[in-house]
Each structure stands twice: as C-alpha cells, then as structure tokens.
Length: 80
Image 1 (cartoon, rainbow, N blue to C red):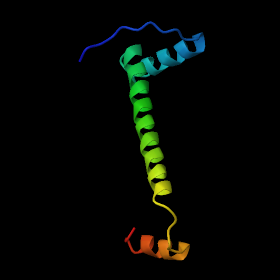
Image 2: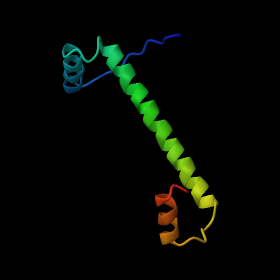
Image 3: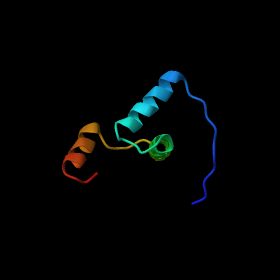
Image 4: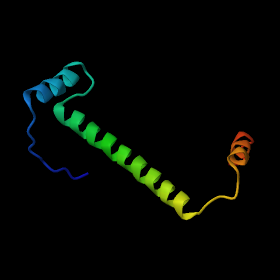
C-alpha cells in the first residue's frame, strides 16, 4: 500500500497524550495511533452513512397502515 507523509501540529497536551498511549504499549509509535484514529473515524462515518440511508429509505416508503401495537407484535414474533 502506498503511503503519504504528512506534517501535522499538536498542542503539548495532545502530544503528551499520544506519547502516553505509546508508552503504555497501546501503540508502537505515534503514526500507528493516528492511523488507528483515522480508521475508527472512517468506520464511524460509514455507520452514519448507513443510518442516513436507512432513514431516507424509511421516509420514502411512506406512511405505514400498521398500528404501533401491530408493529411491536411483528417485531416480538420475529417478523420484522
């Protein structure tokens, strides 16, 4: 995988936090920690996109003719 070198700036507090995570053995170096944060952000973003798509799909499907009690019953019976 091709890599790209970036130069980023942190506050002293942020830098100390990164160093602490590395010293604790959670990560082998600063770069590994930052890459882990980016991966987690990507995963969170994808979950948000999926949720937005599900909401849009629900809104576009229109109003249900079912009563709330009917929906709850179907969920409880594993039909939804």
